[in-house]
Length: 597
Image (cartoon, rainbow, N blue to C red; front, side, top):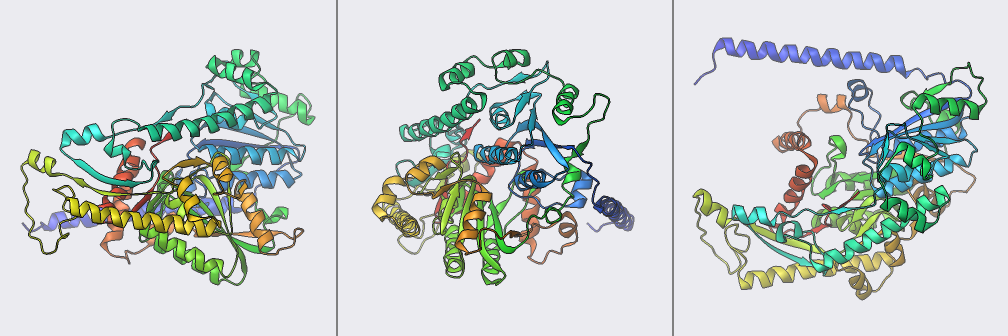
């Protein structure tokens, strides 16, 4: 049926109005950015007010349009830069840290604690303020000089819990059978779909992870609050606490409202009672460049960010940290850094649970090639496991926090068999085959004995290639890598003990090592070159669809995915990766549905 003329006119008018609204919005944002682009004035004896909340991805570009529209998420790199600047800025004499239910992982939390401790070496105090303190909030706060919670606030230092989700029962009800094959005693990436509860092997390594992380949590609190480990364990067992109770048992320094905390700071900084405390807001202080304070100058070191699931094709930069690592995009970035003669070294910052085996190998090859020209150091964020470890293993050095999740050297593959679901909804299909194994990936039939034997042979060869490359990269015997592989997930501390990690530390430590490997004198500064730069809101809005309809479809899927609840988002991403396995692609994936809070 043809569209009426009136309807066409209405659509055209609506499109024009929408376009004008967007143009006006963008114009206002740019004007706002220009106005704020003037460097803000920071008064002497100022307190820098910083906030820690949300997911805190490793890197988010400072985009004036997104900032104006309120869609600019906080990043770890931005927060750490604030501390570096404030440490050398004579106008800043203290930091007030507002910690509000941080969703950063344990490794990022350790990196924040290190940044706070480094800042305090300047002699400037850091005060932490929390209205409700959860485990990680409090762990970060213990690095500060003093901790305050308002009188109606609460402290939930109740210990760590690992949450593992399984969907086998749901699949059984839908008539879907997960015909999976996993290499490695501990490889449990497929357990979400094949099991209804933890296997003994999975329970073993989760308990090992919890023991390590809990031990660091206890020791960190004990050292900061000057208590014994046994005392801290008892305090955690008796939690949660109201603010007055937390003060009484010595977990915080005061049960005070924010204005009273500011009065405490005024006394500490030598203000008179009737003086107004000079507050430098974090959003304003971000506009102070590092270069204006003598930082980020010198020889160039490329910092390449790789966050999200590893896939073939191009990377995506979604909201709420929903990025993906596309092999084409990352290889192009690594090659650019390799060929740029002004860049002396490359630091690859990885925050990934893995993904496509093929894509991981392509990235591995690019790193191997680049390493022949200049040093490459890997900095592990919260997670660098399975495929995330695959792309790290051949770097010159690997740096991780003790609480980083790594390892998971193993392979999973298979297919969902949906014949039962087809029967339930009344769908039937037939295959006409030529070739003994032509029906290997039929979605309505389980693997036959010969098909399974061939598939398992392929998977074993893939695993053998994985451990061979790890062995070569880590200068270890393949048999040894197999013994610590088997899909076993390790903390960064355990990984260092087993030779999978070289040094403890965050991104700053990795850059320091890269500087040394590049033979840059210790007394010389360095300039961090961020690569790749994610597209801005304006660039995304104006970009044409030069990669075909698939790109537009992926963008729509990403937008839809970001609107779903967290558990559903993670499960859909997981299913998308496993869907690749139905065509024979090996998956290097850790059980990233494991959550430790």
